Image 1 (cartoon, rainbow, N blue to C red):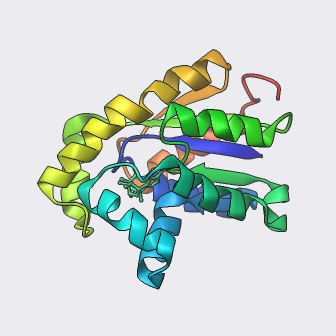
Image 2 (spheres, protein in one colour):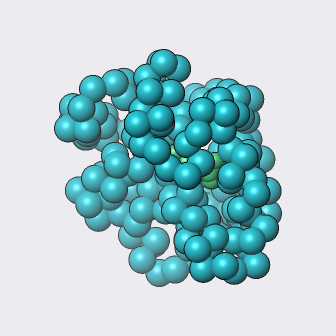
Image 3 (cartoon, rainbow, N blue to C red):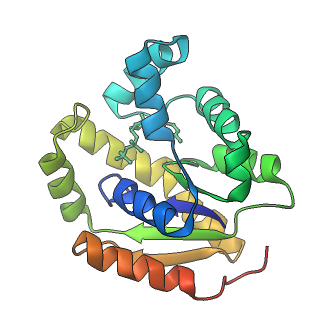
Length: 187
Ligand code: ADP
């Protein structure tokens, strides 16, 4: 299975992604995790990405695409993968569509959450880039850059939406329910 997990910051994508990957034997590709690892490692890419992340802005597409391509080229990704936090704008989605060619994305799970719940969860999480001003900016960036992907994947007949409110187990059950049903479009 080749899955994209969409949703605002704080929707719980990382948690659900890990569980879905465990359950289905998929490679979990989180661009946020890859970028944070690059920052900790102090690589050139990490040094370049850092200021964008600290401000809650998107890291330039060229850097993110390089990380994604490197990971998807590893052999284990041939068995299926779940993309978490990527694509994050239409340009990334188009680059991905082009890279994957005929063996494209099969499922897009869109995790939906109200703004007040987003802010509450992110403030509770307390990651370094989870200050209120940065959260507000990430939400703005999400609406402007990432939300258009909903229409992008809807037009392809791939979009399935799940309510991300509730406990981790409740949300996981909903996601599993969606994935157990046949794909809405053939790939
Ligand atoms: P969130 O919990 O906000 O979804 P992520 O861990 O996915 O957090 O991302 C953290 C930060 O990493 C983002 O605010 C952004 O700066 C950067 N980032 C992650 N994925 C991408 C991407 N696909 N394109 C550009 N920037 C990204």
